[in-house]
Length: 352
Image 1 (cartoon, one colour):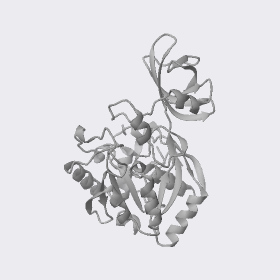
Image 2 (cartoon, one colour):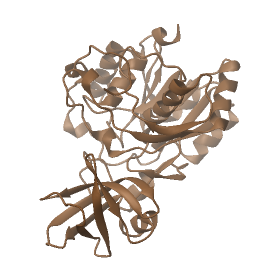
Image 3 (cartoon, helix red, strand yellow):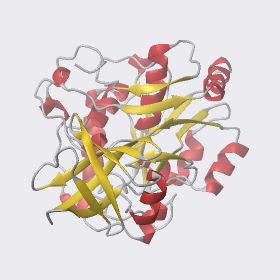
Image 4 (cartoon, one colour):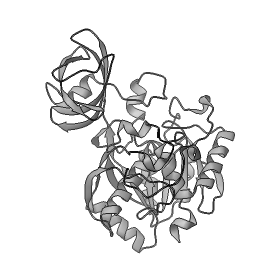
């Protein structure tokens, strides 16, 4: 079982009906142009615009962003036999080595040569669970940048284009390694970051390289039996210090995205007070979990039956989240990676 707490909740507790047309296929015209649903700590719902986030934050609050950078992780090609393949790099493990998902009519065995993008060949060295261990003929990042495509989520129907290369990336992305964007951060542009800084809202960064597992549904009825995917994270000492300053001054720690929240809570599970921490995390946050590091969360709307929906239900309470999602559907909010946002303040039970 994944590191978490005992849970008696069932998968059906985290389901909801979503009309397909509410799944955003493209980003809003401007980064800050989306809608924002504010769920306050008493369960109240408030319809706002994302530009209103400045009014919801106070001097002394701390925003914690995930500075991971999405890599062009998707490649197509063929085996020597001619069979078509699709490769999605999940994690770079060395200058010329990576773990990847490989879709093929027949699973490639060790020694199989994969011709990718009609440009170079990679060799299958073996397996690591569901992933394939691949050796590349040169620097993995350089080859992906030259020949790969942006790995858009499976619910976005169009192939990645030039707009996606820019908009499926935060303006502060700097540490390459993610195969999915920390999408709450997509709403921030440079001018908004400057405005918040001038307002007295501090900013700090963690790194969590988001994996493709973030899109995987939970497939067990008793969620306590779910095996959580692993992701690499880093919480630097500067961020730990910024959190200590904010809390000492009575400010709130606001995670920008569930990935930032997962990194902070994973570090808090290792050390309190927080200090520099890095490693793999399999932390699975479900209702009943008490948050140790954060007080509020900026996030997008999440897939039914997903671990991310379970996380926000832990922060705000299951019934408030059910009402919020029903309200968002009724009010025609846009869902998922390119969709609208929520500002969730921790329920009273989390802060008492």
